[in-house]
Image: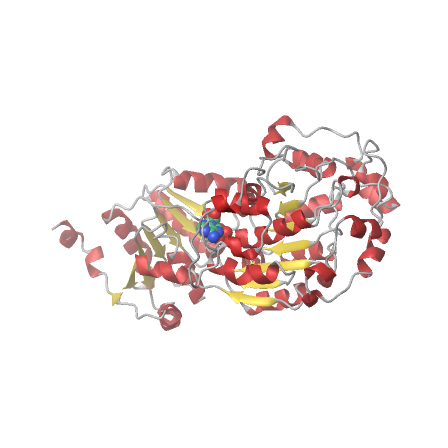
Length: 505
Ligand code: AMP
């Protein structure tokens, strides 16, 4: 019966850390043998893990099953069970999922095509396939076609792929298919113990992943929830404390809060996904992620999928430590967007850049654009200057609090804000259609960032313009960029921009 996994039970007294640890250590370690040998779960596995519980009515708080020090930590949460507030209801998975009983894969018609992988060909569970069909996905995207055959076998993957490549569905399909195939009886499931954790650097991304996960679990007995910073602390805490969650999507800070308070435990994870690892690094989350990883099963006792848009040495080092025998997959998707983006490079003196850019924005009547700066202090100055000139500008950088970033993005989407000034880290998550121009106030030091930046325009088959201002300080970065994008860029001297008389003719 669908929904059979949704029995609500707090972590039981009999489910101790040492019981579970012993059981986990008995598992074969070699994941390359395939998931079925190394990651078996289900009734027998659950029993061998000592995850017995009392009758369903014997609901205990998480704190009751912990050691004295744990109990102290979680004392705050040991109060009587509260039902999740009603406003959270829309986020809850109900026991009644949509029915897939009438559905057959014949209703999901996709012609076999050479060189393309259909979701039909992957041996996915019918409930999952049905949800994919509802999303109107036809063929696997490149990252899906390359990663799923491995991840569905239980292998760790390190994927170099950015947003827009379909990587979210790649890791979600892997997790959901496995969770459907290896159910744990309701009597052995507890609140506070997710089976899959997806770590994302920002609230926006986490909520997007949660939304995608809900769509893909539409017909599956798999529950999804997210814990993210900036909002709903108590509501989220009550929820994770009281409800059984299969897939948890989290930002690092809030997750650590709930680990410390004893409302969440990660020792039962089968899956760990680290999304946008490079951004985690840029945003200073790595110590947090390390702390989170120390609470997870060991690297060979979980399946780890790690994605990053760029792979610098730091990301490589971490990915090696956090995965076991990983398969590397590299997708260069945004390269394609350069075909739809006209790239202008203006050679300008450093001290005239700002003036020239403002004039360009003004004379070209630009009402939806993103200006990228390399440093936070620079973006702050840019925003202030644009505002002084009467431009509806706003800042999107790591130092802007989450709630403000969400509001700013909404205002940018609906046109209340016309020019968004962003750093690379904050700008990577901007997926707004209709952005006519991207300005590179400075050339980025990493050529990959150049591609990410200009990919903010020319989205959804539109065309766009990128305008880069190269000066004596950063023009030396051009050859690297040209090499990376595989084309020569035409540099102009924008004298006419300063010559208003000429412009008016
Ligand atoms: P992501 O890279 O995960 O942010 O996905 C980008 C967009 O592609 C999302 O809107 C997904 O719904 C969509 N998507 C993911 N996989 C596929 C697919 N195989 N076919 C069509 N669209 C997809």
